[in-house]
Length: 222
Image (cartoon, rainbow, N blue to C red):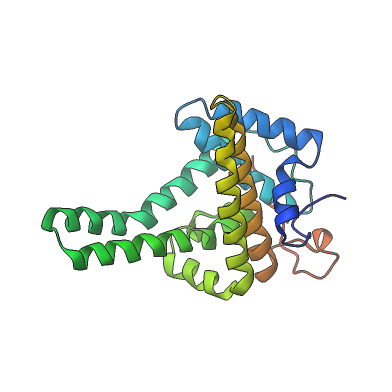
């Protein structure tokens, strides 16, 4: 049975999603190889995850998604810049806290960094839908979506953090295995949050959701 955004949000489905068929495993392996390319490989993998979610949101299978590398790099770069934007206030507060040895500023920095971490999934799935950068640079909107996600959002975090812990077992395979398990972890995390927000905010085409969702015109990358 194929696992996609209409599947139940469960540990089993999310963990199996990146490994469910031969093409999925082949694309995961390619992502692991590309991680060896400093920064560019990481950005391409980010773009690949975005493209997989976009494919599913628009009624297609997630794979193949390793296509149009310039588009993948652009998507990965834009979302990475969003992460920098979200973490910047907390990072500045942390530097000031260290400079002034201020406990109060350390608390502010911690809260800002935590808020950024929580908010980032609130823009990622919406960006996947239409590749609209305006979805990214609106932290208060992202936070609002996060809290509207309810218990399912926090379950997605539990799945993602569990996958992160499991991914470190890849270090036991001469360290090389971590290349594969880290890509697996990121795909599990991306899929988990995409399941939550795609349904909560009706980001699936009707064809992909049994005819019950609002139909959004698919925008394919060019």
